Each structure stands twice: as structure tokens, then as C-alpha cells.
Image (cartoon, rainbow, N blue to C red; front, side, top):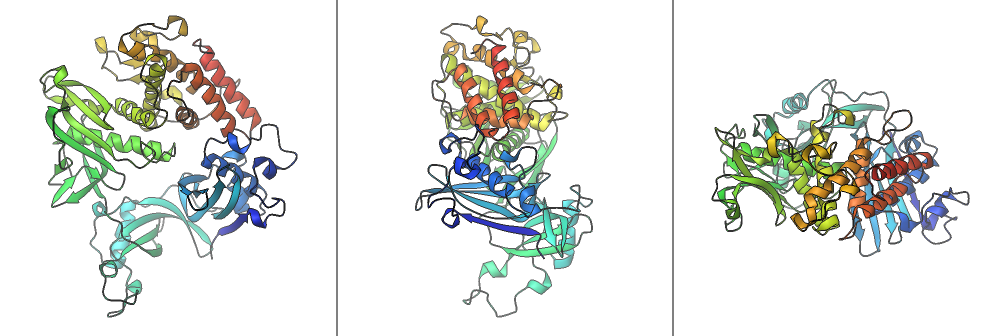
Amino acid sequence: MSHLERFRYHFTDDPQAGGAPPGPEAIRGVGAPEDAEGGRGFNSAESAARFYLAEKLAQEEAPALRGAVGEDRPERVPDLALSTERHQAGTGTTLVRFEQTQHEIPVFGAEVLVEIDDNQRLVSMDGKLGEVTGVGSVPELSGTDALERVKAATGSTVSAEELPPPALAYVSRNDHWHLAWHLREVPAQLPENRREDGRHGHGLGASPREDFPLTGYFVDAYSGEILKSYGMAPTITVPTRLEGEDEVSVRHRFQGSRRDGSFLLHDQWRQIATYDLDFADIESARPPTSAVGSTQADFGAGHRAGVSAHVNAERVEKFYRDQLYRNGIDDADMDLVSMVNCTYHEDGPGPEWFNAVWWKRRMWYGQVSDGTRLVSLARHFDVNAHEVTHGVIETSSDLVYQDQSGALNESLADTMGVIIANWYQAPDRDDVRTWNWEIGAGLGGGGLPLRDMSDPARTGDPDHMRDYLHTTRDNGGVHTNSNIHNKAMFHLLTSVDAAGKPVLKAEEWALLIYLALVRLLRESEFPDMHRALRDVTSTYLSGNAPLRTAAQTAIDEAYQKVGIA
């Protein structure tokens, strides 16, 4: 028996719709609050879809459907994570697909599809949701243990390195919910599921797809029982799990691929690749034909620069996809390519080059000597996140890199760099009091960071508009004046209410900053970012007037403290 409740909606079946897709006012009814936004106010099809879902699910009787809305912030539909968003040219509508999660763990089979027209009115909904109860969120068995249970049941010798990493999921079986390890693309079937000799499922001749079937498994994360299995269509490439040491001797596990006996820093799944320029000049060198490689899946300490760049790129890309719902750096699935061991002839013959830059839609890393060996600037995760964010800006608002718009460009790259770095490295990502607000620790003069968002004066930079530097150098002082906006972002991210509690969670501020970033115009300045933040906050918190007011007050105060109107 499934614990999933089904619900559907189409405006043609809705007698109150009047034969046309309803907008938010029609959904909320005559008594809609003053802050209900018209369709044109939504900043994306996703935000429109979440709004309509919240309103419709709140009217459902089934607990599983009402529970997905969340009582604290119903406009967000917090337990539904964006999966895909696709525009349908034939109908002129956008299909927004969500998957249900609980404690950030996917609920298998629980998903919702919302169809929005070009005016961001509701066309249809179709979904299945479940109320997950009676099961915890912390496994007792590891993903490796789960794979061993599958290997024992199937007689397979597959290794973990040959498979996508296991992930936790909630699964309904026999009238109970289970926390399970989800193993994907396992090239082995349970004996009872194997086809009979001489029979082919598609009715034609023998097929490698049937001879080497890929199977998904759910293994109970407490008992180790195989709960269910299902056939999977093969993917173009199966990622390989690799490991190795970075520039600070920390060991990491990460995704790559295997080709012709070599293990490569090329994650074709996530479209992340890392190459070694071998100290050639970035302007004249021919690009390498193959990613950084090793004869072993363990890269050891032999490719520190490559491992650092690859791991950091994987983290940044994952943050933009999972937390900010961006489809790759350009929002169109571009490859994230990194080049390590680079030199630049304008800065000297090498092998040292003290820089890391986003240029020609990829990352380029130089290196400096620590007295015993060359150390890649790829070691600085915040610098990596900062530079890749320039790629996000370049392919969205494309802020002109001059004067105040250029300073805003730099500041937003700093802001996202610090947020992403602390998301992975802070002692407690949810407590900004534990965050490191430096950018490029030790890379500035006298052992100082390049910049400090919490105290720009520490590096001799302004923290208020009264000290704005008017200059023709550095594209109008973009790296200096950016610190004024940096200080505003610090005030915002650390804002608290009258009771001393954070106004919003750090990831919520990150999302709002990102949503404001992508809607800026090319020559937007600091006040434009202020207004953009207010606008996206109005949409994001449209159903919670008190919290919306508190958040907008925090935004206004953060900018006022640094003299920005």
C-alpha cells in the first residue's frame, strides 16, 4: 500500500475559474490580503508555482497534502524542492516540477507538476505527496553497508567507485515508511527479476540493455532489508568515485570518470572538468585534450592543485543548483571548466602567477611558492566561489565592470563567495556568528585578507558612502568601493529582530540576494540592488506580512547604515 495522496487540478474543471486560468487574486478569493501579488509580480515560474501550490494544498483534506505546505511559512511550500523547469513551446506554458523532501531527504515517488501560463496564471497541477511518520532521519547503516547487502543478494562484485554515490530517501512499503539508502545504476538484478533465457522484453533480438541491466535499489537504513528494486534506463556515462589530497593536505572524495585505463577529473554527470595547463601562458597555450588524470582512483598527493580546483568547483556548482535552483553557472547547463598550473606572460615568465580569475567562461588558477613547493590558488575556496560567481553575473545581469555597477559586481561576488564558503566550512552554517567574513585570507598585504566584509577598514577600505573613492584607476575603484556594499551585506546577513533572533536564515538571505542579483540591469548601482532586494522579498514573503515587514526593515537598515538610499 502506498502512503502517497494524489491530487489534480485543471482550470477547465474549476467552475470558479470562469473558463480562463486563474491568477493569484482569483485563487485567494475576494478576501485576498492586500499583499497578494498579481501574476506580473512573481519573479519566476517557480515562485508562482509555489504560491499556487500553497493555496491549493492548504484547502485539501488529506494530512499528507496539507502537511506539505508547512504552517510557519505557507507561501514557500518548504518541503517541496525544485526539480526541473521547462517551457513548453507548443502550449506556451511552463512546467515546474517539484519533489517532496523531509529533513532535506527526498520522498521517493512524491512529486508535483505545476503548469503556469505566460502570464504566470495557474493552468494545472498534478501530484502525489506523502505524510512521512514513524521513522527517523539518521541512518544506522552506511551506504557502503547497503551496497554490501545488494551485492550479497545479487552475487555482484560491483564496487562503490563504479556507482553514483548512495543517497538517503524515504520509501513507503507494506503500510510503513522506511528510511532507506537509494542505490542507483547497479549492474545486477535480484534472481527473481532476471529474464528467462531466450526471452526478450521488447520482442526483438538480444540487447546489451537487457544483457547488462541497470537496477535501482532501496535498502532499509536500519535493518538492511532490500525494500524494493526497479529497472533503470542506462545513462550515457557512469561517474566514478575518486579521492585525493588538496593543497592543504585534506583528503576529499569527489566524482570523476574513467577512460582507457585512466581516472580523470571529469565529472560528466555534473559537467565539471579540471585540466592542467602545465605552466603554459593562458593567452597562447593550446587547451589540453584530456582532464587531469591518474592511473589510480586515489590521486594521492600527486595532483593537489587539480583536486583543490575540482572539489571546490563541485561544491560551488552544487550550491547554485541545490540552494539557489540555478541550472549550472549560466543557468543553461554549461560545463564548469577549471585550469590549474597557469601562467600569464604579462605578469612574468612563471612558474609563479599570483592570481585566480574567471575568464573566457572558465576558471584559471595561478600558483605561488611557499618556500618548498608551488601552491595553487585553487586552495582558496572563497576565492573560487567569488570568481565563479562572476560567471553567474556575466550570464545573468551582466553588470558593467566600471564605477558603481562594477563595485556592485565585485561585492556580489564577494558576498556569494563568503556565503558559499561558510556553507561548507563554518563551524555552524546556521549561526552566522561562527562565520569567517574574510575574502582571500592571507592574500593581502602584511598577511591580511584581500577584503573583510565585517570590517572593511581593516584592509584600508571604505565602509560608508561618505568615503566613496572617486578615481579612474581600477575601473573606477571597483575593488575599493565594493567594500561599502559588502558592509551592507554583512549587516543584512547578521540582522536580528527585537528578541535577538535572526530575521531570516542565512540560506534565505542567500536566495534573496541571488534573486535580486539576476534581475539587475547592466548599469545597476547600489540603490538599485537595495530596491531589487525589497522587491524579491515582497514576492518571497508575500503570504507572511509580519515577516515580510521585518525582512524589509532589515534590508533598509543594512543599507542605511552604510549611507545607501
